[in-house]
Amino acid sequence: MSSVVVPSSSGRFARRLSAAEANNETLSRGPTVVVPPKHLMAPSQALEVATAMEQARHEIDSPTTPTTPGTPPATTVTDKYAFAFDIDGVLIRGGRPIPEAIEAMKMLNGENEYGIKVPYIFVTNGGGKTESERCIQLSQQLEIEVSPGQFICGHTPMREMAERYNTVLVVGGEGEKCRIVAEGYGFKDVVTPGDIIKYNQDTTPFRKLTPEEWKNSRDRNFDEINIEAIFVFADSRDWASDQQIILDLLMSKNGRLGTRSETFDEGPPVFFSHNDVVWSTSHDLTRIGMGALRVSLEAMFKAVTGKELKTTAFGKPQIGTFEFATRLLQQWRKDTHRIDAPPETVYFVGDTPESDIRGTNEFDRHADNTWYSILVRTGVFQEGSKPRFQPRATVDTVLDAVKHGMEREYRKALKASRTNTSAALKNEG
Image (tube, rainbow, N blue to C red; front, side, top):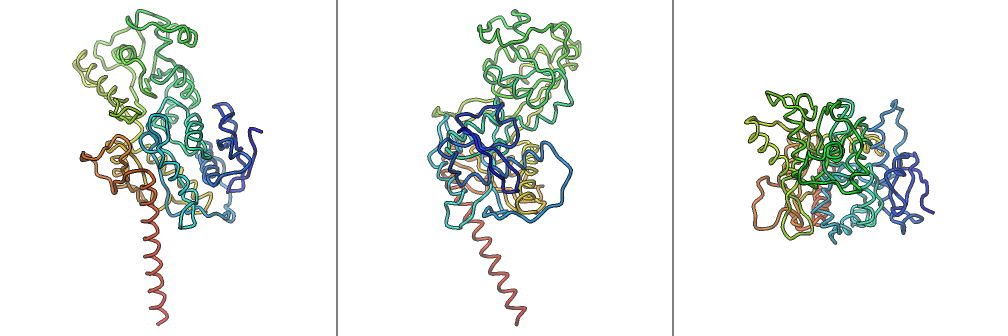
């Protein structure tokens, strides 16, 4: 058996699909939780949060007519606070789980001295894959039940731009994956660099398409096509070729390849799914990422045209990503606890001061709830350096981060209880 159906905490139903059988197509058929095969017939403690977050995400993405809320379902999941995790460098490094990450998930899912479960989501700048694909991958790596609804990728907010632009160029990632992501978001006409090279092989003098790339690239007549926007969904696999094509479009007349604007301000806008200059991999030292490509592209545009290039980045530290996370957590809390407000505190655990910590701190300044930044030493940030953006707490591992947040919440609750008891005794007196 590869799947079973169970009711969610809100009384609705969600499929539980084996990670060995799951793919983008099967996960697109309604609310689904991805399950390690060993947990398929014996649900783990992670099921409740995964299912409820999946339902909340579906409600955000496809809003329906509001209904009268009923009695909140019985639950041991706290509504007071939640965790949001970066993935690379926090939970995973070089494709392998950081050992403490597995223990941290167990603690959040009930294996703790407080007798509660804590809700959590994953907020990553990593892109080039659908939220469903990241879900399947993380379920296998951490061996827990997770749902696509718990994932917010750097390019997730880009889905809201699908109605604004018709024909778009999507750059980065492996093979056709970014095209698949963009089409899944609702973009109607998605072009890749491979399509352009296939049309005119002289576009990139030093890059030739492999037989597989030639087969997957689509036949188009770019003499008749205007590209309205450029989206860098994931890290480029060929900087030289991708930058050449992007520069051609930026210097074109209204996104028509083969043309040149006299003013160099008629090209399409460029959007990046995040702005991380470096990121943590299995290598001992950090590797350059999409933010470096953005800086390089802006410098080359100025060198060639003499003008400044204005680009837009999503992901962390951009506020839109944190706003989307807040909407998701608020919908979850409304569904499970009938409280139409986000959790009072969200602990964001990251390894990159320039994106994770900076974004959390900046969003906290104007958010209605508290966003509490925790920096771990297992990724980009290493001991001995002073982060430009200071976290509320710095710890060794993600397990330490979870312990820190839960202990802090316990102390807050204990203090509030004592205050209430003192007030009650005073009133009785």
